[in-house]
Image (cartoon, rainbow, N blue to C red; front, side, top):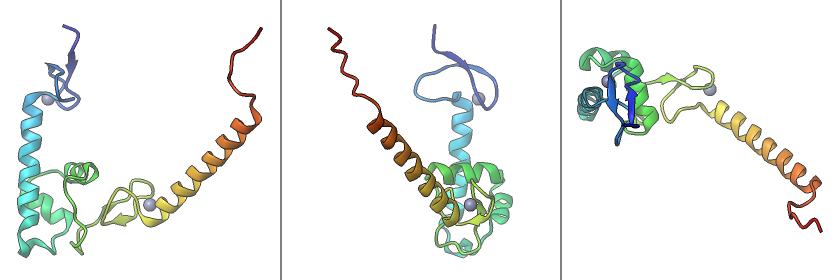
Length: 131
Ligand SMILES: [Zn+2]
Ligand SMILES: [Zn+2]
């Protein structure tokens, strides 16, 4: 059996099939997701903060953020619901990064792009036609 691995969440050995976690953790995660999702869907909870959501659903804040990072939960439109930016910890309300980090990463990426392009131009082509 070459598909055995330890569940990253509980350490239990399981057969890696469709998921990177064991069935028990998967089910637990789905239940957590469901709780958060249902809670946020209620219009009276539109003004909830992440702390309030976490307390009401008994789902850890880190897990709620994990669902947001996965794109399964969106809190845009929830004015008080903020969580830390992945890059600088500033409070954000959508995606993984604040606008500043997005802009920074974008410019870094295009810089990398530029460098790579320059390098490729400088290199001889990779045709291996040595006589
Ligand atoms: Zn597990
Ligand atoms: Zn940031």
